[in-house]
Length: 206
Image (cartoon, rainbow, N blue to C red; front, side, top):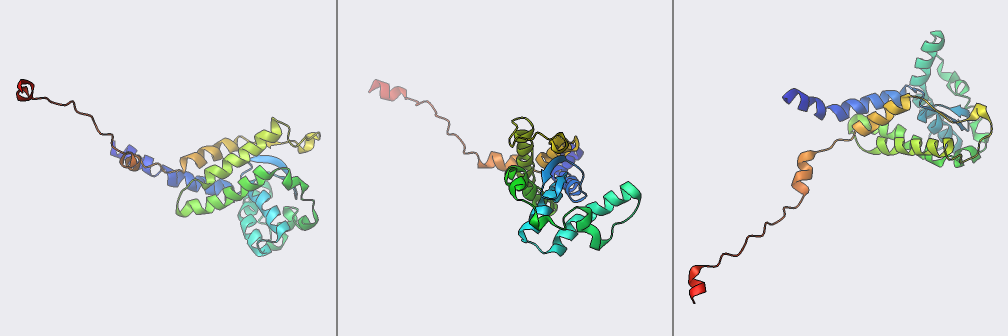
């Protein structure tokens, strides 16, 4: 019994770490048009926007992309990509001149990607709700375009696609939230129990 409670108490930490590796290693979660062409991970969506808006220096964006680029390089052709070629690999060299309409049409996916990436790093120190909020925003953006058809997309090559790994990311995002049952019980106000009035026999005689 004690071991099961210990496992449940460590579940948010474990889920946060799995979510971090899903994000930072750029496991494909979806396929959606973005400034760099087609993006399959929140890191790619976030990086293209960061480079286009020049919010972060190029070195920081490269550092964000590099772990996933190494994993993809080892899987595809057993090579480690060079640091100077990171932007070329992700088609981000000319992203500043790309049209912003693609991102503006998918604000939910863009905002959700920001929260997902930031939440993945914050969750390593303290698991919270940022990962769940970001993942739900991404899912809603994908559902809105895939099912509701907003924005309208007639090109099958750029159609929205959701990978099965998205379900794993969603489960990890929800599991990373730590619920304290004892705190909930303590915070709930105690309801007073009304006691019936006891009338004495003496008062009745009077």
